[in-house]
Amino acid sequence: QVQLVESGGGLVQPGESLRLTCAASGSIAGYDAMSWYRQPPRTHRELVASIFPNNGTNYADDVKGRFTISKDIAQNTIYLQMNVLTPEDTAVYYCNAFDYSIYQNYWGKGTPVTVSA
Image (tube, rainbow, N blue to C red; front, side):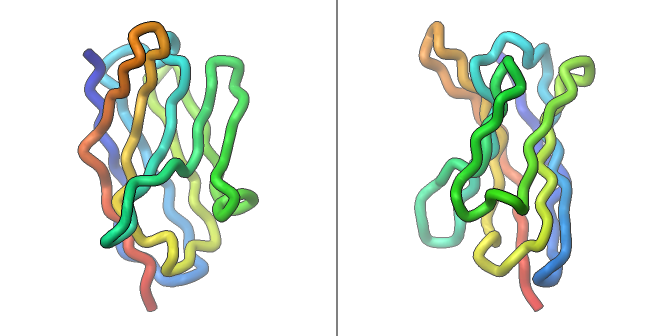
């Protein structure tokens, strides 16, 4: 079972950038999707971005053009570059690995991002 550890969250002002990192305890190459989710205050967890084995990506509509997901297979790490942050991006951000063969999701414990003036 893979362990996922997120880092890079913090407090920033609107318009600033952050880069989140998710370090996996083992190889991420075999997972059908590696994703970032977020859970804003008082609401449900939502998908932010996914990256697939063929390096294809998928983004939520409200982060397209501002966020970029990437991965480093050799380092067993995925990243989320977040630019032009707004208060609406305030949330706890979670890393996710999905194994379709057993329909299993693995989650990190999250890293908080606060965007406030």
